[in-house]
Amino acid sequence: MPFIVTDACIQCKYTDCVSVCPMDCFVEGPNFVVIDPEGCIDCSVCVPQCPVDAIVNAAEVSPQQAEFVELNARLARAPGWRPLTQAKAPMDGHEQWAGVACKRAHLRLTW
Ligand code: SF4
Ligand code: F3S
Image 1 (cartoon, rainbow, N blue to C red):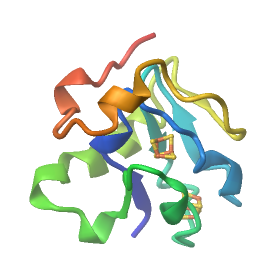
Image 2: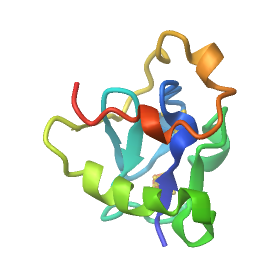
Image 3: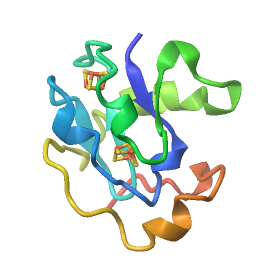
C-alpha cells in the first residue's frame, strides 16, 4: 500500500518530506500536500522526515484518518494542485497549527 499524508500536515506544510522522495510523488495544494499513490513505491523514506508525523502507510491508517486514503489519490490529480519536489518554508503560523488535532475542516481545495 502507498503512503499517505494525513491531517497533521494541514496549515503547516513543512515539506521536509518532498526532497527525499525518490519518485517525486508529492503534490501541493494551498495548505496541504498529498502523495500520488500511482508513483509511491512504499519505501517509507519520507515518514521520519515529517516533524508532525503526518505520513503513514495507507494500510495502517486509523479509522479517524481513513478518508485521507481517498483524499491523497483524488487531490494528487485535482486542478491547481501541483508537483512539489523541493522543500520550501513552512506556512505562516505553523508553530500554532502543529499542535492542533483534527484539522480536516481546515483543508482548502483551491488556492
Ligand atoms: Fe516517496 Fe517513498 Fe514516501 Fe512513497 S514512501 S512518498 S516513494 S518517499
Ligand atoms: Fe506536510 Fe510533514 Fe511533508 S507537514 S509537507 S507531510 S514534512
